[in-house]
Length: 176
Image (tube, rainbow, N blue to C red):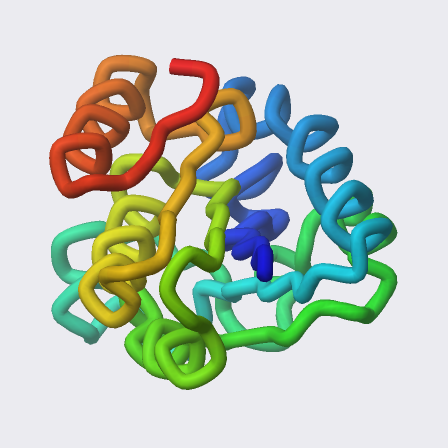
């Protein structure tokens, strides 16, 4: 079986408070990946970075004092093109931290040795790497794949460093 994880492709990370040109540039690749997996009948999962009005008072908010992905706001919503590609057919995991242990646990319950779990999205150097390593820990016999062309980091340097980290942890990195 093959599974796709779309990580945090939300307005605040694409064009909003923490958006970047690099993030905008991967939207078409992410959408194409979603359409391809759906056409094959594969399950698509999506994570949503989810914070609340007290974000600036949280440990993360004290280190990154930029309100973002506040539940219910426009910035919390998935990018419009990504939402259209998904068409409401993804299993969604809201998470208040970088990785989703809940998603990794669910994948451990439904996967078997040799299954492929591919990740794409934002940010390579924070949430993609966190989720990839969690999934690899929960599903060590699965092939965890990250497409470098369908991810973007905070900077190009940190994007590449995260790809190297994931590769060293036995994740397959495509297009690197």
